[in-house]
Each structure stands twice: as C-alpha cells, then as structure tokens.
Image (cartoon, rainbow, N blue to C red; front, side, top):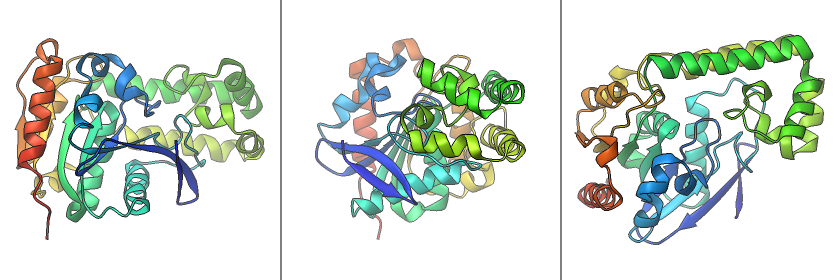
Length: 287
C-alpha cells in the first residue's frame, strides 16, 4: 500500500473502487487499521467496504499510531486525527468528500465536519462509540498503561510490546504508541529516552480529553447543532457502542437520518441498500 507523509507522520492508505470520494475513518478502537473494515465484528457480516467500493472511491487508511502508520509522542486529540484525514485528501488532490466512520472512527468524522464543513459532503456514522461503559473502560485502559509505566519504566514498555506485538486495544500495558514501537526501532529508541514524568502527563491528559463524556465524543453538541451536513446514524448496542450515543447524534445533528433498525437485523443486503441510498441522495457537490 502507498504511504503519504502528513505533518511529518507516515500514513498507510489505499484507494479502492471508483466514483465519488469516500474518506473512511477505520473502526477498531485504538487499532484502527484498513483491515478492520473487513475483519472486525459487524463489518465481517455486513461487508460495507465491499459494497461501497462498487460505487465510490473508498479512501481507507491506518489511523496514526495504528497498524503501519507512524506516530509521535504528544497529546493526541480528535483534531490530530482530523488533520491526518484532511491531509490525506489534500495529498490525493480531493477538495470535497463523503465521510464515513466506524466505531471510534465516528468521532474524527464529527470533528472533521465541524472543522471543515466546506469539504464534507455527508457523514455516515456507523456504530458510533459512546456510553458510560465506554468511558469507564477507556479510562481504565489508559490507567493500566500508566500503572505499568510507573512500576516498570519505559524500557519495559518497549520490551513488552516487541515481545507480545499487541496493539493498545489488545494489551493496555503497551500504551497508545504500541503499534509504532513494535515495528519502528528508531521510534522505540527515542521513546525510552524521553522524560518519564512528562510522558505520564501526556498520557493522562490524552485519555481524559479523548474520552470526555458519557455519550459520543469528538465534537461539542453546540457545534454539531450548527452543521447543515446530511448524516446517517447507524446504531450499535453493546458496551462500547451504546444506542444512547447514536440517539444523541440524531438529536444534535439537524440533518441526521437515524436508521432505526436493531443491530441483529442490520443484514448485509439491508445495510448496503441503506448506505448507498443515503450517499446517492447526498452527492451534490458544494459550491
């Protein structure tokens, strides 16, 4: 797959299919890679990428700090994920695109639309993360990493990651930069040399600001309420994708269509038909 360098960080990406551009922020929590669109949970069953690529140019990529994309030790927030997506569109010479997010990928879609409404044709919000359990579990994940760092130091973080080869979502002890540490020896060498206390502050603030509410994170409700962008909300229903988070987005987005179908009834054919009909109705380019 090709690589684009965006703000000094490598982004692994791929374009699949043909037609109007559809920028897709991957599902998978803190392991948001291209492969998750076809190998994770509900996406295995509904195959959205397979169907969408027949009508759209699907732009898929590993989120920074995930998969084969690079990273940088800093307090990463939603705006940083937006910058990656916007930078990728600019790299490809695309001024406007439909956006789709799965799982945690819905949050940067929301933030992207608020920051760049002129570049956003529509939003598909597929199983948005959120809910009290999601917040609690997310904060616990960052806490487990901080505890491991406090007890063992940064050298042992690198040793653990390079032995186990697990991303942050699979083993919280490795931290948000685990995927980069596992494959980039230069990054790992610089990682262990940084100031330990400064690193702890970065991690503490990152977890708190990324997961800052008991509903769908990513953008303030007042900002969402000002958007005039068509949106389709597809609800999930589990500990990471609370239905209440999907309903919250329906409430906040003035031009939201809520697909009121239980997750178990979201079949492959029905899901493909709903996604494609929504995107077709939202395809007029903005002036």
